[in-house]
Image 1 (cartoon, chains in turn blue, red):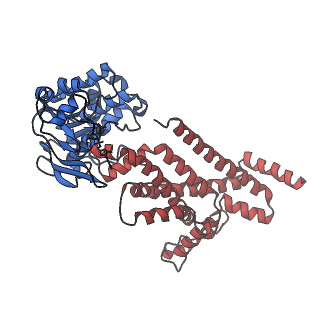
Image 2: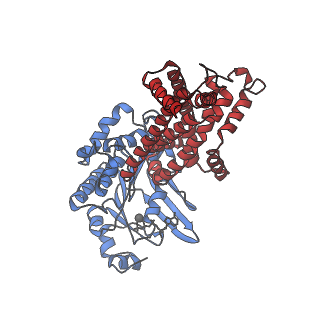
Image 3: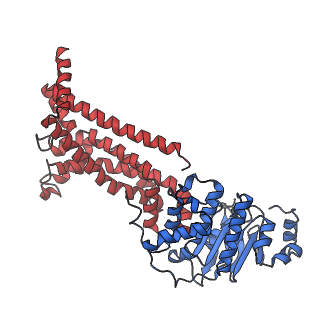
Length: 254
Length: 235
Ligand SMILES: Nc1ncnc2c1ncn2[C@@H]1O[C@H](COP(=O)(O)OP(=O)(O)OP(=O)(O)O)[C@@H](O)[C@H]1O
Ligand SMILES: [Mg+2]
C-alpha cells in the first residue's frame, strides 16, 4: 500500500501561477433538456467579497463548480487569468463545498494534505498547517480525526484547509449553513480577514444579513441566470429586477 | 480409532516440539504465499484503483473480466503458469519450473485478480465521494489513486488478508508448477495431500492443524477489522 508521504508529485512554488480574474462567460449546463445554468456570466474581477444569492435550485452550486474548473460547461467558457482552468493552478482557486469531504486523518493532516497538493515543500507543511488552524481558532482540532468532528467543526476545518495554500480566489458554498452563532462569527471574521489580504471571494449564502455584513456586491441567480452584481444597498433597497425584488420579499420560488 | 487418536497425539507432539520437517514446510508455505500476496498487491491495488477512477472505452468489459477472474480455478492458473515456464514455453529459459519462485508466480496469478477486483469495488465507492473535493485541491490522476488507496487502507488490508487466505490454502496451482519436491517445493497443502495418501497421518494432521489455525486467524482478523470499519462508518 502506498505510503501517503511519497506518492504525490509536488509542483514547486506556484507564485507565478496567476488565476485572476476568475471569469465565467455565457455558461450553459444542460441536462435532460433542462438548462440548469443558462447563459450565466460572472467574474471575480474586483477585490473583495461577492455574494451570490438566489432560491434553491437556481444553479449556484453548479456555477461554483464550473468556476472551480471541476465540470466543463456545455457552452461558454471559464477562464482563469484569461486561460482555461488547469490542474497546476487549481490550488490557487479554493472551493469549500456545502458538504465538505474530510480525509481519514487528523485535522492537522487534512490541512497539510492541501498544502502538499499545492506544492508546498514538506519542511514547511507542518508549521503552515498549524498556523492555518490557529488563524481559524481550530488548534484544538489538530490531533482529532477529522471525520468524527461535528458538521460545524468540519465546515470550519474545510474553510481553514482551503485558506491554507493562500488561494487568490475562494469560492464558498454556504459556509455557515450549519453553524451556531459563535462559529458563524468566527467564519465571517476569517472571510473578512482573507478578503483584506486581497483574496477574491465568491460567497453563496441564503442569509440576507450575512450578505449585508460581508458582501461588497451581490449577484442574484435565478433559474440558471445571473444578474449583474450590484452593491448590497442597491440589492436590498432598489433591486434591479422584479424577480430579485420578489426574492428579497420572500415571495420567489424557483 | 486408536490409530487416529495416536496420530492426533503425534501431530500435537510435532507442533509443540517444533519438528524440523514440519517447521520447514510451514515456513516455505508462508514465504511463498506472503511473497505472492505482496506481488499480487503491488499489481492488484493500483490496477483496481486505476480502473475505478478512469473512464475508457471497454471499461465495463475489463471490470467483468476482473470479476470473472476472481473465480479462476487454481489448476487452470497452475496450467497457465506451467505452460509459460515449461522448457518449451516462452519463459522456459528462466528455469523456474519446480522452484518456489514458480509457486509464487502461480499464486500471484491466482490472487492478483481477486485483489484487483475487490480494490476496484472499494475504491469506486470512495471515488464518488472524494473526486470533486480532491480535484478542487488540484490533485492529478496518480495522486488521486494514491490518496484513495490510502483512505481505503483498512478495507484494503482485509482484501490482502483474503488474498493470503486463498493463496496459502490452494493446492492445485502449486503442485503443478512446484512439483511437491521434498525440502524444495513442499508446502502445507501439497504435503498434507501427499502424506495422507501415504497413510502418514501424523504429519498430515499436524500440518492440517497449523494451516487451519493460520486461515481461521487470518479470516478472524479480517472480520474484526471490517467490524471496526463498520463501527466507525462515519469515520
Ligand atoms: N449532475 C446533475 N444532473 C442533473 N441535474 C443536476 C445535476 N447537478 C445539479 N442538478 C440540478 O441543477 C439545479 C441547480 O442545482 P444547484 O445545486 O446548483 O442549486 P443551488 O442553487 O446550489 O441550490 P441550493 O440553494 O439548494 O443549494 C437543481 O435543479 C439540481 O437538481
Ligand atoms: Mg447549493
